[in-house]
Image 1: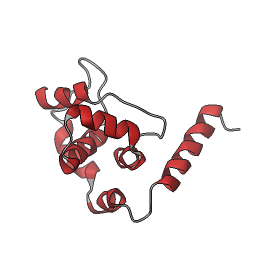
Image 2 (image 1 turned 90 degrees about the vertical axis):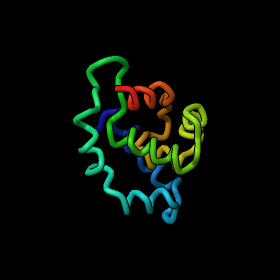
Image 3 (image 1 turned 60 degrees about the vertical axis):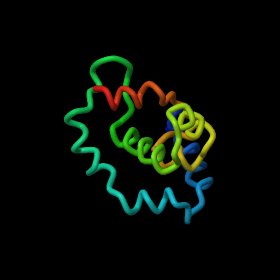
Length: 111
């Protein structure tokens, strides 16, 4: 039997999958770029043991790519991720997930 949480995650994942157009630029970018391989080089310098819990390295890297591509400040990026379904999909977040980005971006740069 499925747990309620498992059902909700499946439902939200499927809903998010259906909300993002099949030909969206972020989907194309996910197919072109192997973010997992890129993140391997960062993992050795990325600390998740000190301070606030950090994002998964792949998600943080994707957020930085979007921030640069869309020319957003940290605060603009936070709002963009909160409001943009395609951005959530690209970064690997759930539909209802809202994360603060400002401090985590600084954490990535400074540590």
